[in-house]
Image (cartoon, rainbow, N blue to C red; front, side, top):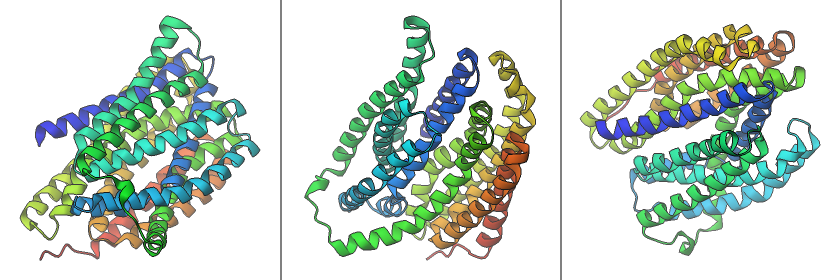
Length: 411
């Protein structure tokens, strides 16, 4: 277990470092931080549309597959059918939105659409492999996907062309993600051992699945809006340079989210779902370990970043990154509250109190949007950081208060 945990954390850590290195690379060698702003808006748009396509059906599916692999092929087929409808509706609508708004330069839009499709399938493969209790395989594929295209971009800049060309880097991303998606799908087929295409699913079940998944979709979209709406509002009220500064700061805060919400959740939650009501003593030990690691990560990583960030910004030689550094500290404090809320979120998840988690997310989204409209036009980057901090304080408070009401009941 310790060796597996170390490997998972190492893979995720290298992926996070690589993402940061890419932002550092753009900040260091681009003319100004507007290139980071363009990259930030593209990544934000990617995240939003991928969530819309996925319809968050993986939340229920993952829990059911984690309980038993026996019906995994059936659940995967149900996901595929659902995605057929989400693609027919979401992709044309979002493509139209991209062209009608000026957030994304038109030259990037065809590449972004292709990247959205590939990244969605790569993400779903990752989730299914984790639900099948293959976190090492999932993380290895995930790591290669996130790391390889960045290093190819570095080779392109330093040894071939020596110019910042974001469009070309996105093309490298598409190629690597496509290869990793096929590898992931092949691994799932080997594990499941059956062709998911052969399974026939009744229309009633699909309608039921859509209704159920829509609740999780509401929750995830709420959280996505909390994460990304501030960048679009900064772009509207300010410019791509401000978005670039904020995106750089958010890369640091994202370390907390990735370590806790991805590494620790992948390591512990499928096992906790399986153990609950089956092996109560083992469940209690694993749940306690999960909570301790969440607490440690939420406190230690922000402190490390506070020490390292100013030094890195000086290396990037972009003075505006140091001018607003208080905003980074506010984001890190908000990230700590978000990290601490994870323990209480997954207590409710294991107890299948999904509606509580959903309505907390919706309430926090509304709160965040109100704060964004109040703070960002007047305070810019600082306003966006304050909105995020206050939102995550509210999120943490609600999760704590409502999770206390419910206790684990062991059979």
